[in-house]
Image (cartoon, rainbow, N blue to C red):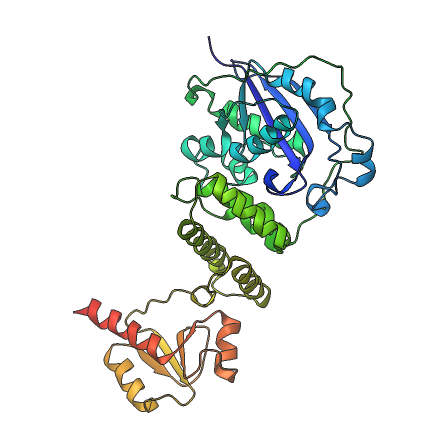
Length: 381
């Protein structure tokens, strides 16, 4: 006989229960062993504290004030979890919060279950980790983001797409006396539009580092408003520690995160002022160097058109001669067909450089150009 499943999603006041953050909404969708969705339940939860990033989860203080606290809903929630396999998208995040909430009441929630973020990457061809991206890859309808019930339904859809790939997993064993707690729903769906740059996280690729996607999924949540408070920084450290990620691994994840953002931004061949400002901001928040991602990767081919601007360390005619000898075509002005502009200072505001940026043409230093020439002539031998 197969498993029955409890697909859960929680909205929270912050990133880590270790910093006294609490669950403010919880949803449970039941899926039977055949993959049929058979029941669902959702309620807001009064956290007895401020609500955190309300612009992200969309829950108001008035709604939370009339909701039961976790102690009041714990018996009902336990009954809906017990005897079923726990499922969530980025299971480690939801599980840590649920374990912390039950632990406050003196109960232990077992640490096992199924992660749809992992399933979607392994079996459904999802190249990105976000719930929206995984649902898009699997053809699962996606409801309102950052609404516990809609996200739980979406995760249940992912589970149903690969149910035959899930082996036997220990179900939850947690029984509390039922008290008949009441549930409180949102007064309206949360559909506020995020800044367009925040949507880039849906396109970010998965990583190979063990537990890296779980950490970066939490980082996605933290950076959705392009701000990291001191508390959020501490919470991310808690998350990294909970996932057994050391500082070298975290910094490597941060560098990869920035590089992935830059790759998406450069897809159209140019970096807009807004995109550059976003990359600089994210780099400063993550403590990594932005310089490498502000210029696109460049490769030259025989016959490419190049333009020089500014007074370089070596005379311009020397550089032009080297470029011609390598099989490049040197021009005096920038057009849309120009492959590269070489500048004494790549940040120059010269007319040629400004025109190149408007066309999405890379502007590089003479040292970088020397390296590119070396690659070109080496490849031609």
